View 1 (tube, rainbow, N blue to C red):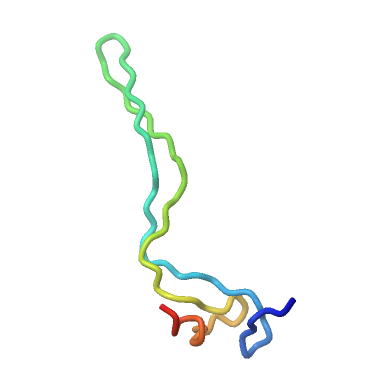
View 2 (tube, one colour; view 1 turned 90 degrees about the vertical axis):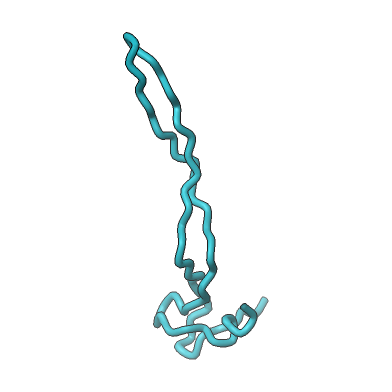
Length: 68
């Protein structure tokens, strides 16, 4: 198996997003006539892919970014 490599030799890259959206549910409970809200976190949802950088040297991965 062969992997694409950065000029620095690293074969690991990072996807860069400029927005993170969080999925949540808000549980509403009532106690003595008073309402309470509890937020349940259900993970992150990525949006707006900006590009790729090398995980080691942090330079733009131009060849990977050309496909965007």
